[in-house]
Image 1 (cartoon, helix red, strand yellow):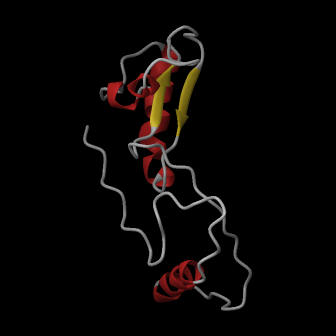
Image 2: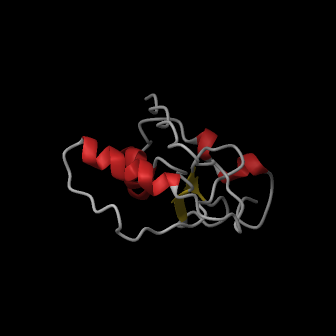
Image 3: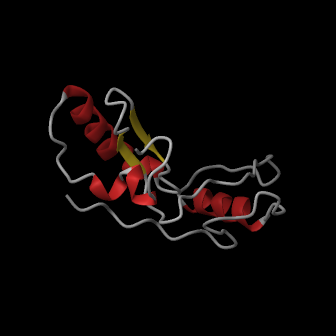
Length: 121
């Protein structure tokens, strides 16, 4: 199974913004314009939220099983495409939970790719 490529970022966005980076008003403006282009009513003055989005160093999600705790599964770090990948991730997690082989190789998403550590040894 081939995973879809991520969607392009809106103007002014960064993959890994600094925690203390100031809000960029272009982001909500871009999203509102996209909503309006799809025919949705969108209040120009509506409040918006901004905050940092965690990104793993290699931009891949973490999906798998903790090696020394086989009943502990994980699926996080989908960056900006969590909704896009939620169905395929849920299926992989269901397969792992049920003891089935997932439909695709999860080795690229294993936390051990970052080396030995508290949850990888």
